[in-house]
Image (tube, rainbow, N blue to C red):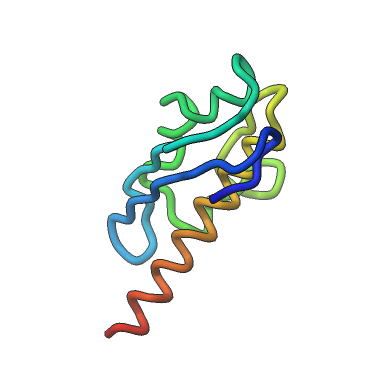
Length: 97
């Protein structure tokens, strides 16, 4: 769950292996229609596919994801939630080995 401009953003994160994002899907959000709601559209969500977890950050923070113009808070919320969720899943997988 990310904390966006309009509230919680529920995100499904798929992992291909212990370091690669297979894909993401925005399950629900209360972001501003027309701006923040663009976080759920494929031009944004597709940017995560195939990325190493370490590269999941906004470009301005050294990552590979461009923020949506006018929706930096929402973009950052998704990026942070995807990275944190993926890292948590990897940690759980390693602990169960």
